Image (spheres, rainbow, N blue to C red):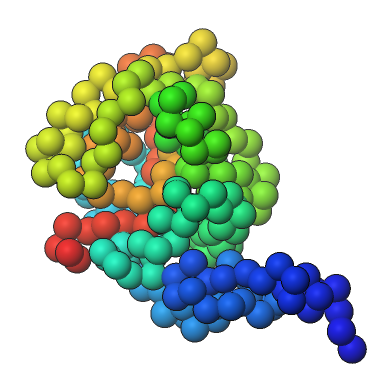
Length: 233
C-alpha cells in the first residue's frame, strides 16, 4: 500500500546531508548508514571530563558535554554545514532532539533552569534567517521541557569567521564580543546551559559565559552538538 509518506518522498525527495543519498521515509535527518557511522565522543555526564577541563581556570562551569567528534570533511562537518548554510532548520531541531535523547538518561539536564543559545550578530541573523544554535536549543527543549532564552545575550560585533584562525586569534577575536540584555536580570540564581553547534577552542562559549557571570549571579553549564578537538585535525 502506498502511504502519504511514500508519495511525499516521491514528489519531494529528501537527501542525506552527510553523503547525498536519497532518504527513505523512515530515515531522518540522515540515512541510517551515516547516522550509525557518526563518531561519538561518549562524554555523557562524567564529572571532570576532558571537555570540562578546557574551561578550568578560565570560567567556572558546573558541567560540559558534547555528542560527536568533528573532523574536516567528515559526516559531522557536512551536517554542521547544512545547518548553517543550506537553510536546514529542520536538521538543527532534529539534532537537538537527538542530543537530548542521548544525554537524558545520564541526568545531564537535571537542575538546568534554562537553555541559552550562543547568539548571532543581527546582520548575520538577517542573512541566514535563523540562528542554528537557537534551533538546536529548541530541539533540546522539545525533549526536556527546559525553556529557551534566546535574548539574554547579544553579539556586539559581527566578527569574522573563526574557521581559519589560530588558537590565539580565536581568543582575541572574542574579547568583548557579547553583552547581556535587561532580560538577563530575571535569570538571577538560575542554572543556565549554554548551547552551541560546535566547540573548538572554547573562546566563544567562554566569552558568553563571562558576559553572563559579570552581570548576574548564575551557574553555567555547556553543551554542544560537536567538538572539534585540536588533535583530531
